[in-house]
Length: 165
Image (cartoon, rainbow, N blue to C red; front, side, top):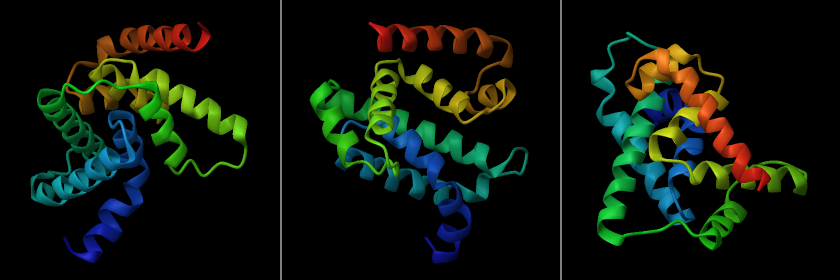
């Protein structure tokens, strides 16, 4: 991968990649592996980008697909369960870049609740939090946009339930 490709096509979208990798990984080591694999796959598939969507949409889609694939492989080989302890270790090591402890704690709780969701629901809510339109979410997830609104409402209710009780 050339330095220019990384500088112009990955680095500006690294926040997207970081959020998705963090939501699907269980440790700092997993996160780093996921991030590296996503970057590699973006580079490998660059010639398949047909300019039918935004580059950011392409990055989201590849990031989600790679993370889902890696998660499924990991589950097959290790039967790994997400434990609260491993999440806390990961969230303490992660780079939240925030000054307040309360905010960091709230973010950690939110990511903890997101991690409890199913694989596809995680992707949908991450895209929703990024303020993607229902159409964009549907395009990235590979479904129709009519059902996205209902899914988001259900996901938000699940998260509220987890955070409140």
